[in-house]
Every structure is written in structure tokens, then in C-alpha cells.
Image (cartoon, rainbow, N blue to C red; front, side):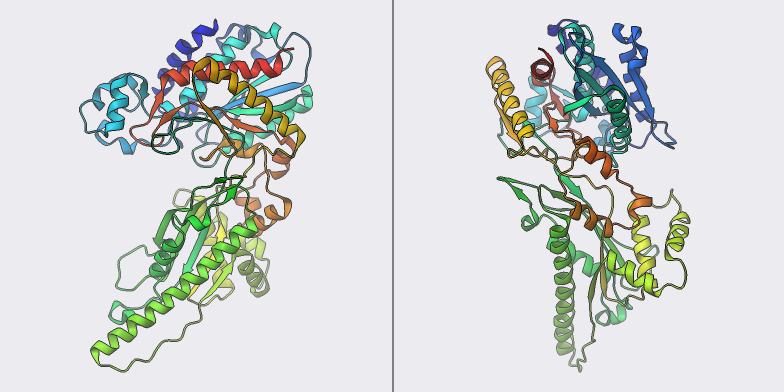
Length: 551
């Protein structure tokens, strides 16, 4: 394959991959892995070296999803220097397409269908330009996988020019739990041990996009934002609606908590001039499962919370403070509304006395441990095993465990229990004060300047890829005390959500995101910019490989 063919090949592969509906949590994730494996095994080099395409089935996975790896070893001279190039193979769902749903996996028919529906001026302009491919997964991130597959094909013909090694990796289950990448750590450790590889860095080819209206930069990221899912189990005091002023409504507490945290920029985490996005509520619900005329006794809330550099201790402190404030606000509201009502009704007002409390999970666990008559760990294991996997997801299981321990600990209402639930994504970036990392920053800057001149693009290098990323699981900047704090407030983490911190720390692979370029990932107007993604990006990746692995 010639370099000039990279555009045609990566574009063709993208169209074929978009046509495979690999929505997260469906059998399509297996199908896309089989497609990638078939493509790689059809490359002449891998026909001669079939052992260099490795398939790793996910452990105990009913959908038979798999990681697919391809290894290329340079022949110019033996070298341990190794670059990992990786991407995820799953997509989010397609319900957002509405009446266009039947077209969302066919980029050609979708183009025609989009011409017949109302569009924003920007989307209409992009559609009519002919510069974009539309379809679910087009930008996030099947085009990124396609570019890597085309690069693997090209470099397999040029191994005599390389001193060093390339590992191409394609992982499922990125869009929620990152299981594919987490399980791939075993493969990276195994290959490192068996072949003596030294991982220089990894390139994630996930999507990039404009960061604000009118933004014309292309972005390269030298790390990954961290993600937490702070969660709150809320215990109120229910009352009949005929005595609505006599309770402490869990739904009212939940709504006040959301009001204090959701989109609040006071929670943005800054590092060297870059700020994480504010928290966003992902779930707010009372725990009633049938209609009645009682106010809510319990509620459950959790938020997406991005982190650049803050420790778990700092984040927890801010959120626990917000919980205290929410309870105090609700108590004041009940008092003010009661005073107003009884004054209007000309009745005597006798206030109800409450002592609202906020607990962290670690506190609830210790109280329950002291209170429980028997082996609490055995009870927890039995309780978790009794929860139906089909009825409850892992966040709900943890919430129910918190509820169970709160009852054992005899926690009285009103109260909020704070805890963390999955997924947890470690944050990382390159630091100028670390010699090895500064060298990478400087050399990458030189490569980008060359590409800017050759391709008439403008790059901006930032520390943190702003969306959730598999790159979080190959390098971690959280110090030990921060990880320990997370562990203590994460219900039954070792059993329900074991994170291989030792493996991540042992690999410690700098994580770049080069990425496709497009717009509206996770929206029905998702589209990938063809000239950059299939024209410029492959050249950037090839130039980077040659810079590090050619003598």
C-alpha cells in the first residue's frame, strides 16, 4: 500500500464499520471485533505471521466480546522501543435518530434522508459541503479505528525501515465501563515481559472536535481527564400529602442537591490554565416503585464529575459540604413554608425538630461493622449475590448496599450518605518537570509544526482529553493516599468494581490522543470531517511512528 492510498482505504473501512451496528451492550460489539480481526488477518504480513494477530476474549462475557491486537516488529535492527495505537470499537445507542433510525448505519442513505429533515444552519452547511460523512460511529470512533487499520496495513510493508515495534489494539466496552481496555492490561504486561518491550507512549485515535463556537483548531492531547461518579443515597421522612409540611421529602433534598452541584463551575478543576467541565447530573430519582399519596422516603442521585488534578480527598470534601448545605436549605424551606401556611390559615405553628446528618460510606460501614451481630463481610457478599443482575445495574447495587448498611447502622432520617460508584477513570498528563515526559512534549511539538506547514492546519496541544477515554487506564497521576480515599468510599470495590491500580502504575504509559475530527458525537447529527480524518491524520500518525522508530 502506498501512503497516498491511506485516504481511500481508511474511508472505505469506515463506511464498512459504520454499517456494523456495534452499539454498546449488544452482540454487534462481537461482530465489529470479528470484522477487524478478519481485516488484519487478510494483510499479507499477518497471513505469514498469524500469531501476531492476538484475540483476547473478555472474561465471562456473555456477548463474547473481544480485544483484537496486531503486533509489528521492525526489522532494521532489534529494539525494545514500542508504540501502542489503540481505539474503541463500540458506539452509543441510536434512539436519538428518531425517524432516521433506519438510516443511521448507512452513511449514504443517511445523507439523502438528512436532506429531507429540519437541520441547524451549521449542520445543513456541513451536509451540503460534501466534506463530512454522517452516521452512528462515524466520528466516535470507527473512522479512528479505520485509520489505525490502514496504518497497520501500510507499516506491515515497511518493517525493514523501522527500529522498534507497533501494537495496534481495538477494544470494546469503552462507552460505559472500559472493560476492554482494563482487561487488555494483562496482554500489555505479558508482551512486555516476554519480549522485553519498552512502551514509549500510546496514541488513542478517539474523536476530537471544536471546543467552542467558531473554534478552528485541531487538538492534540497529552493525557486524559479523570472521571468520578459521586453518588448520594438520600433518606427522608415521608408523610401523607394531607400533612405535607410534617415530613422531610427525599425528592426535595435530591432536587436541592442537584441545584447546588449540577453545572456549578465552582467544582471545575483547574490545572495550568485548563479547566475541567462542571459536574452534570446523570440520575435523580426517588425510590418509590408504585403510586401512593406519601412524599418520598428515599432518593438516589449521581453526577458525572471530571477531574484534572484534584485529589479524591478534595473532591469528597466539596461534595460532602454541598450535601450539608442541601439539607440545611431544605430544613429552612420547610420552616419558612410552614410559618407562611400556618399564618395564612391562622393556626398555631409548632415546628418539627430534625437533626439532618451527612455520612460518607466509610463511616456507615464502620458503624454497621460495630453494630452487626455476625460477619459483616459475609453478609455483604450474600446481600450482593442476591441482587438480580437483570434488574439492577452496578450503581443501583451499590446504592442498595448503602441502604442495607444504613439500616444496620440504624441511621435516622433525614440523612444523606455520600459514596462513589463506577466508572472511575484516573486522570493523567505529561509533566514538564519529568525529563522523560518533557522530551515527549518537545518532540511532539516539532512533529506538529512540520504537519502544520505541510497540511495547512493549526494545532493546539492540551493536557487533558476532555471526554472519557480508555487512555485513563494506562497511566495514573492520582497519588496513593488519593486512591486509598477513593477505595474507602467505594462500596465493596474489590468485589464489585476491582480496578487494577498496580497494573496501571506498573505500565505507566504516556497517553496521547491524536484523533479523528468531527462534530456532534453521541448525537444524531454525528459526522466526521473527511479531509482531516482520512487525509491529514494518517500522515500525522505515520510521521510520528517514523520520528520515533526510524534510525
